[in-house]
Image (tube, rainbow, N blue to C red):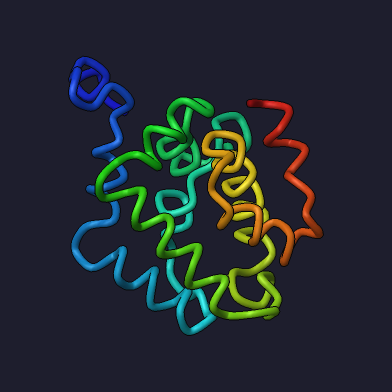
Length: 148
C-alpha cells in the first residue's frame, strides 16, 4: 500500500491495489483456472490474500492484509468481496478434488491461511467453513490464528 492509498479516506486500507492487480483479465483467468481445477498462473496473493507476517516475498508483503479488520473490509468491498465468494464457490463446485492437485503445495497453504483469516473476519459466512471442513479437516491454519 502506498502513502497515498493510506491517506484516502474512501479506501483506508488501500484495497484498490487488489482491484488493480485483478484487472486486465487476471481475475477472469484466476476464476477460469479454479473452475477447471488447474491453477497455472500467478495470482494467489491478490485473490486469496493472507494476513501479514506469513509470507516473505515482495508479492506476499504487498498483498498481505493487516488483520481481521482489513479482511472484513476486503469482504465488504463491492468488487473484491463478491469475487472472493465466487472463487470460493468455484472451489466448492470441484467437489472432493485435492486442493494440492488444484493449487500446488505452496498455494494450498496460502488458501488455508486466507480461509482462516476470512473465517475469523466474517464468521457468519458458511463458505469459508465449508472449504475448511472439506479440504482441511475443519481445522484453521494455526500460523494465521497466531497472527490475528
